[in-house]
Image (cartoon, rainbow, N blue to C red; front, side):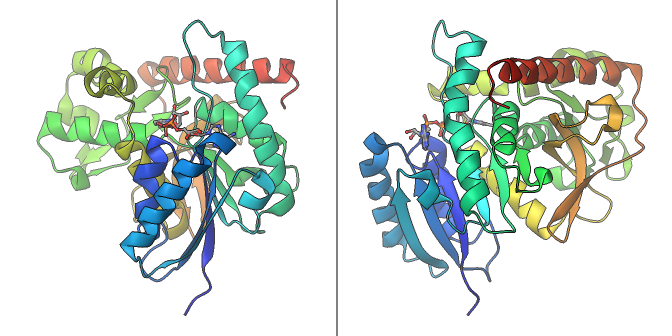
Length: 328
Ligand code: NAI
């Protein structure tokens, strides 16, 4: 049998953790031939809850699950890890300023980045889910100078999947006939879901829709504000769909995008499309052989340019803010 791959999940006792761990253990993250060893990182008061989840994982008798370790120590949690899913974060509470939020998350992502730097496997891949995800990824990356910078990514796959689903609904096309959709920028309300390069059954999606008013006034705001709409309806934030997107993000990174298609991932910018180098911003990316590349040479129209720039401006401000706080 193959040697198990160590997968670390932080915030494992939270609601995304609860929706995520069972799918990792059942083989949806790394495929049906790869056994996994789970490492759960939680804060001390949540260790008991994490133990409870581990008991349930045991009770599933997953053939691919070779072991579970639970810890409140980041150095132990990331020891030998190949896939690090950074889910636990400090949420924004009422009246909290952006600076306070970034500082509180710096206190989480800086030490975790350092622990990844010092203890993770050489092939470690990092996905940051915890918000503000792009900037938290930047903080962790800065604390891990020995890990190749491109291994630090943040999640916009949930936004991507939301956009796919909205477009499918509008056009009546099944989601698997839609290709080349892109989320640009920050995982926040400024993100830009772009259908100008997307195709539905091989035809240009924007032309097929032919309704710029719908695009500007319905599609984009619906995708960008979907998280808030879920909270409003469910009384709790997206969890199962976020866990599903985390699975998709890593699975695509490891197994590759389909020929002729791409996905959306927030990755360190190489300066493409006018996004300042080093910002962790969402791009169209293809993946193969465990690495990814930003799709090059797309023509960006006026409509898209304004929106990409606005989201990138927000990311630049967040980077300045964490720089000012000495977090990067
Ligand atoms: P939650 O509050 O249910 O769980 C978070 C867990 O993290 C808690 O169990 C907490 O004890 C733990 N935690 C806090 N600090 C920690 C630390 N230093 N080390 C390890 N664990 C720590 O939250 P939920 O719903 O699971 O969401 C987690 C994060 O994911 C939030 O920041 C949320 O905003 C974000 N999110 C991101 C999405 C995306 O598309 N990028 C989508 C949905 C949620």
